[in-house]
Image (cartoon, rainbow, N blue to C red; front, side, top):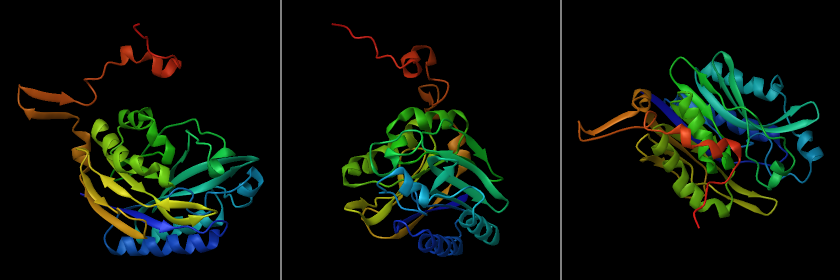
Length: 280
């Protein structure tokens, strides 16, 4: 069993040092409760509602920068893994990125692929990779916020044998139904754990709704913050359950397999960008 935590927190735009201190403090709190994997919201270090590329770049980090080094040092000190969102600078390009760090440093990074016309995502470059990262205790995939509205994103991670998908988000009020429905649906259809960490507070006129959630492979909600206040959610995760894709409800009568029952031969339009055939 693995104990995981979702940190629902407020974020101060353009104040990376303040946000960093909050991250480090909440890492210690969650680790003190036994959490071994701790997930923070999208763009936790910088904030989200920037008005230009130049403004976003001003508060962006590099992977070898001091802020991520301090998170990595705290993860090593506590013996935990941590997923946190930040704005990543790569030359003159800006990415909305999530990083997983552990006791031995950076485990992996993910750059947000699906970009809404909102906040800093209006100016970021889309990522181009979906990867699963292996740690000594679990296999992790990462999506960010709007990515979860595209089922293919988590399906690719499931096929890469992810046990858990961490989903840092910055959900505004218009995403309320997404927060209520999508995490459980993605967990159920892929038979994986989904850990959502959303932010709270207000930023340049945008209110953020909280509703962080941890869902199990059956689509059940293990923990939820059904409000917009700061909170740390905890849940126990059985990674072996996520790996059992053959679900036997009644032996020989009612069985399903989340991988083998797929029919990829008819999914061509998903990758070709073509609409499905229509009968008139």
